[in-house]
Length: 83
Image (cartoon, rainbow, N blue to C red):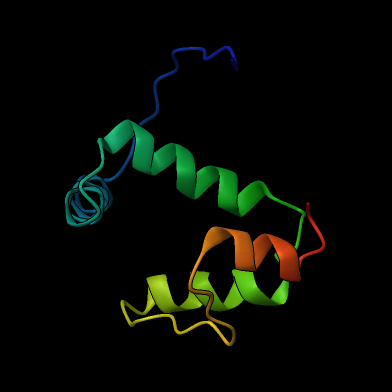
């Protein structure tokens, strides 16, 4: 588990209110929402094509439709070469 350290920041009131609204729309605690935004901003890893498409759909609040569908988990694992 990652150790967390309590910190405090000063933010503009309008920014804080916007963050609260965005956190609420995602049904997340303000702290969790801000941490995820900061992690995303600091991440140097680029997501793969499928993950990028799913993230874009989530951000745009549209439905992500994968290119391949499977009827069972076994079928998916077999396609991936996992036994």
